[in-house]
Length: 95
Image (cartoon, helix red, strand yellow):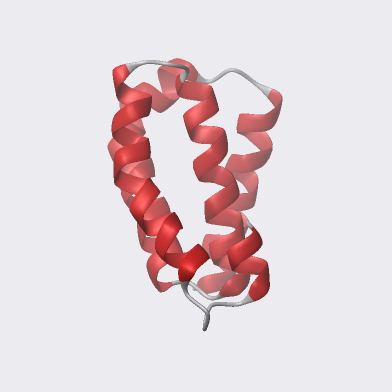
């Protein structure tokens, strides 16, 4: 459900904010990226906000490498679409 996904996103945001989890993320980066992308595309406002915040933390955790650039190339257009979408909620556009 949406509440479960949002809770999972918030838990990951909390973990990524408090610990360096490079190995964990490297092993699961495509799964995380796909999940974030799906939440941003199909989620409601609160889920989109949580996913956008997690996307930022994911790139920060990855550092300045090829993997981080790949994540940004995947999620950048999706985030840009939300920002430019006048019908999207203000909270989602700000995230």
